[in-house]
Image (cartoon, rainbow, N blue to C red):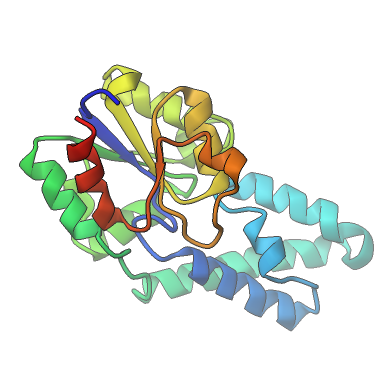
Length: 222
């Protein structure tokens, strides 16, 4: 691995423990509307953009429940999740602050590349005093194709203007790892809800238990 000159962070499930909040909001609303939903369904969409998720919901549920009820499910679950996020319940993932400090001490810039909406990304970063610690944000509004398409990481590469071999992507989801690998940028996976299989591991340079393990990995691989 070449010297790391910039780090690209995913957000959901990596910077913040938000995936459990998204699942909670979706599950609550699905139960209220009588729509069959569980963790297995939710996990299919980890790292996927909203528009693709919503289109798939219509494919899954329209025939049995009708498009109007599915639209209600989408709208109400989104509102429920936003309410939870605005209440400040999203916690930072272990090791995040230590990693940010390490990168700053070594003058390594960092940006966020997330399939989430920019206003939610900015709001969460600001609420946790992290907004000024990232030099840029690439969000779903900046691309046409969500992960696992590599477009968001290609855009991040363009924003940073640094050779791909000197970049590092930190991801927690299968789709994020696939997208990073397809972009040709080294990826470290820190699994959140789903552990990687061997095929996914082969698309990473490492699978680590925590963000706290990243500084040592970078030092050991200089």
